[in-house]
Amino acid sequence: MWWRWCWLCLKMIYKLFCCTISLVFFCFNVLWFFCNLAIPWCTLTLVAICVASKFVKLQRSPNEKRLLSLLNTPDDWPNYWPIANRGAGYDAPENSQAAVKKCLARGYRNVLLDAGITACGEIVIANRLTLERAGLTGNLSHHTLHELQQLSITEHHPMGSQYDRESVSTLKQLADFLEEQNMPPTLFLHLQDTSALMIDQLQKFMAANETFTQRTVVISRSPLAIYQVAALLHGHIGDLWRNVGVRPIVYMVNSPNEKRYFQKTMKTQYLTDSLRSEPHLLMKA
Image 1 (cartoon, rainbow, N blue to C red):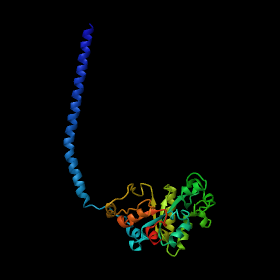
Image 2 (cartoon, rainbow, N blue to C red; image 1 turned 90 degrees about the vertical axis):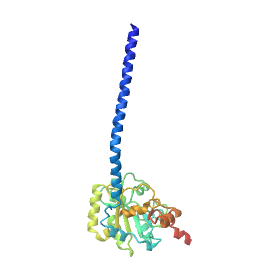
Image 3 (cartoon, rainbow, N blue to C red; image 1 turned 60 degrees about the horizontal axis):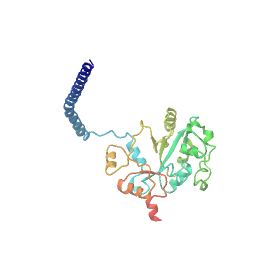
Image 4 (tube, helix red, strand yellow; image 1 turned 45 degrees about the vertical axis):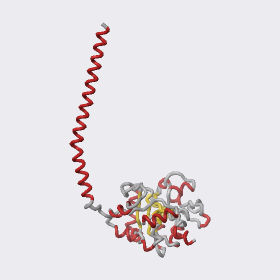
């Protein structure tokens, strides 16, 4: 009897094997059919998109003229290229009025400052690094304006001994300070907080301060506000971005050789933490 059971088992295994092979061939034939049917249409669609892209231009910024007027022209070389990150935070206390004043005194008009919002709803010019140096934890939104203005942002900076004591500025105080300058800078206001409260307060402030708004470029890491370009620009890529209305700015450049490359070859502006390493200054030395 045992051999009969063995024979039945072998027959079942054979049938299972045949069914499996048939299923595999069926799936392969179905896939082959769809591939032969779809590939020509996909190819034609891609060709049509490539041809259409040659004739379609992306919509440019409605405030393009204002933006170009804010960004100095290359005739102002070499002061055109660098954008002083946090007021050139390696040379002076970052995000301070002293740092902005030093940039202007040296002839650099493009300045980027960080902006956040306090627990009491006040926009201030500071970032988390300022709090950490002072021994505070959490974001700016966890602290009140009164707490922040008790801090000395110059005291905790490596070069702070060269500057007078200065506390965290509000956006209103910064605007008043810039108004007093003979040659106000082009301000790149980097939003550290993109909450609804921050946006609402900023809109109200800008609506009430037209002069400040005219010379300020608001930037944000929010994907709803800007495109993230997470690659180093090479060759003609910078020109391709400019052709569709996107102005590339490189982040972060502090080496003199890299700065010279982006000035001479790429002709692209860059963010920098220090203006002391500008190529033309080193050549004079």
